[in-house]
Length: 324
Image 1: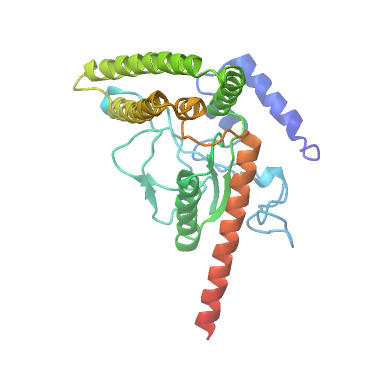
Image 2: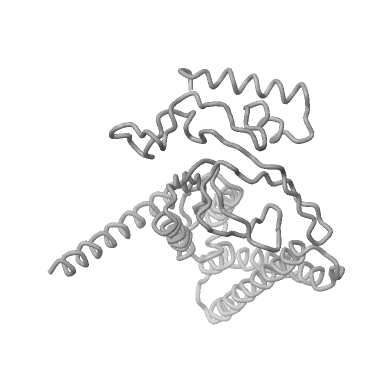
């Protein structure tokens, strides 16, 4: 970054945007960078990365310097969709990439027909995927996040012959994680103070169940009473249906917890001690031990590494079988 003066260039561009306050910052910056529509952009600072990759380049092949992460970009005229009476943000189709015939649904414009998939430059595809948020124990949803998008990446690379720079994250700071940490702390404090007092525990759990049940019933009633107009945008209708399905799922989960608490009360009435069980049923979303985000992240990484080792062993066995 220092070698090519990118910090100064970025600062200068930010100052220009702040001073001119353009209505379309993306288009404004594209013109300032020389990537004007239907015109050949200026030559990049460094040799094209994909045309002349350096020997033994670590990581992504051909990444000589930060200048070549995007390379020379060229955009066409903006396309603005007004589907369902809703104006979507402008989309600037790339003109510098290779079109191999792949067509995708563009969620930015929400156009009815698939559009050509054209990278920003040549055959290089820069792909970012949001990974798991580790606020609980590892589950099948984490595996699906890796597996599904890895299959798509392999199709993009092996069938369509694109060169993919793929990045996936693990979120360890998030509202869900902060909320779970807060609940864990409150639960630990409550256990320490009232675990030996079953009457206090039962009273607190009953009050919590009543409040949660009323909140869910109010939410579901409001969603059921909401009628979208016939000409409502498709995205708005989809969001409404998703919200209804999510509320129904939470209601089923709540009913399961309430049934567990009722069973525990019956056991307690017969002389059994059930304070900790009630707490675990009501205060834990999945009934699992409370652990920190860091520990869950380590567990996720360890399980992913172990799974990868098993897959490598299976692949080696298949290779040996094919060779035999």
